[in-house]
Length: 423
Image (tube, rainbow, N blue to C red; front, side, top):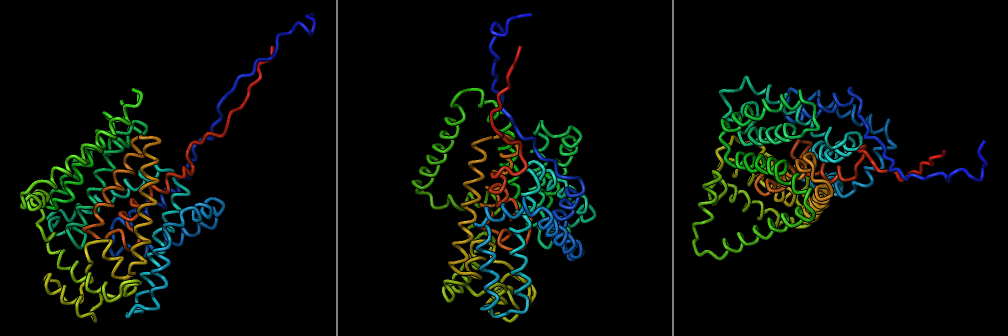
């Protein structure tokens, strides 16, 4: 036997320890998919489904309160706007429908935070994509009416939803971490939804789809490879920013006053944004009369509001049509004043900075898709009101990136363990 004093000293080996990513139960994923499909298709026929899903998701919040409540507290910047909307029922001139609208606005961040506490970013994108596929299949019988919106009230809304399906499907197809069967199905839906969107004849959404697709392909081909060269990503990012600034300076210095009209013609618009400027001028007059807290929820688009009906007549809409101001910023400012506008902008900044930081930390396809969709929705806020209302896909993509940055359910680094190797 060897003498104890002659044994070699034990060797200590440092080992990184990680917590595995959480897998959401399939039944729960099915529930979220049904909910996302129900808001992807904002039709009255799905109203009972939406109410049942709301109750079920709120029930999940209670059951998993140890996960959901902390995230609700961390995501507080998303709630001031909807809380102000709830208080506005006390000064709106039409309080009959205001409580329902305010409650739906409050549910927008609440349900999204609950889903973010239960779903990883990749799971959320996957479920929204499947919901979009179901919505696409639901639209097929309306094939002949796509130019009028198909199953939607307007063609722009239909085209915008098809654009979301295009980007989600392409992101999945390019993502090697997704299951091969899912990637093949996504490859089929990309050209199908491109065809549907072109038939809707919405040039703006088509520009978003083409530019977004090019960005995703660029991330896959260029951005991923650049990580192998030190500082190449930072140099490429700074070069893109510098190029954008140079283009802006050149455009501003050009004396050609018709340049803006040429750009609008390129994207299928004209200098009045298809009559939107007249609506924005009316919004400015209403806001000047109620600058700080607005007219309250549902305080303008009402059959009893004369200016609202004048806008309907000028836009050749039937009496009593519930239009929008075609700008999320104007929508918020008219109904909730500067206080609501500040809350809305703060929520966008909070979500945007966190989405960008998440992408800079890990520029994979999942985070790139979140950033791309955030940018698309944020830009659309200037000409559409989708993100300022009740739960919908556009509002979700505006804020989910900020929530995904918390990394709930993702694979996490726990610490360094020390393995002792003994002879």
